[in-house]
Image (cartoon, rainbow, N blue to C red):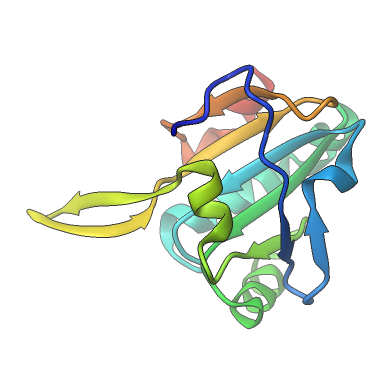
Length: 149
């Protein structure tokens, strides 16, 4: 089942880079940018994370919380945060629980071969926990503009 704008965002409990459990319900009353990306320290993912980092104060001023999600480990996330100076948490979805909940783990094709991977997708969730926007064609270098419209 594919999530749509207007659907309640599925709640979750996933560890962040420090092993602290993060629940969507913890952010009730705040807007949440939940962005799924394929892999720490890869060019597109660095561009996306750094664009969000460079515009983090703007996002905070608009009432947003930013949460990044990939299947990388907590240790990998710690290194990514440290190296890129990211001010927001990264969730370690090593079991793909969140990917399956949000429909972001799917078949991809590159150079004529098929494989399973993360669909780079951002869910903008409003204060009541409803999906307000789904960005599937992410512009990694200008992602904040897509979120803030």
